[in-house]
Image (cartoon, rainbow, N blue to C red; front, side, top):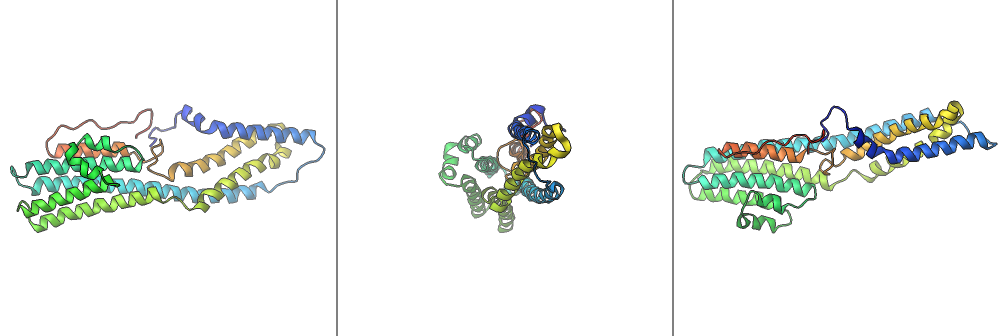
Amino acid sequence: MIVAATPRLSRIVSEVWKPLVILFVWDVVVTVAYFVLPFKAPTLPLPLFGTALALFLGFRDNSAYERWWEGRTLWGAMINASRSLSRAARNFLPDPEAHDLKRTIVLRQIAYVNALRCQLRRQDRDGEVLRFLSQGEAEPALARANAANGLLDGTGRRIADAQRRGWIDTIQQTQMEAVLVDIANAQGGMERLKNTPLPNQYRFFPTLFTHLFCILLPIGLVESLGFATPLGSTIAGLMFLAVLQIGDDLVDPFANTVHDVPLSAMCRTIEIDLLQSIGDEAPAPITADKGVLW
């Protein structure tokens, strides 16, 4: 997620130079053709086209931002549920009998959120899980297609075992299980966002109409702008292409790009809070790197 007040110039140039060059070349071709060829192009109702396209792109960008914000909301719920699970384990489980189980639940939850982060970003999850759990502890979950869900199931089984041993009563077990349900619901919402793209009409037609508008733009402006058409048309077309790109950047909040939800920073927040809740030393928070928080 870009947290700087303004994006870095190098990043802007890297994202827009290709369409900028193509637009400028096309505008130059149209301008030269206008002054060289004997016939003139008809006047186009560009204001009408531009207004309709702007509304279309605005509606699409709003839909993309809603997906991005839902992803951030779900991860906010995940942070709160992780804190609640750690607090319940610390307060409900007795010392010294269940001391090791407290640590296990906390470390499993930290491993869980990092495994979920890797799954959403399509990254390797095993190394992140093994940072917090031993091979024997992590192996049953890593053997499953959905390792994050396997870790959560294992935590539920350990809480049930604590109830059978008499370390917690059924009411406390129910309270802790309710937190696990909240975590599972948040994970389901994240997986839905990741695996369900915007409908094809939301992706295809805005791209088609924007490119078509950029093609028609210099034809409609050349009569009034003359030799300034390449400059004016390129800048105007770039505005529409930028709005189109905003929707593409936000539609997947877990894409592991500079525009997505800062999953690494939020997983580190969970790690810090949970380790400190059991008195362990915690790492430093993740800070922005060159204006980007990952």
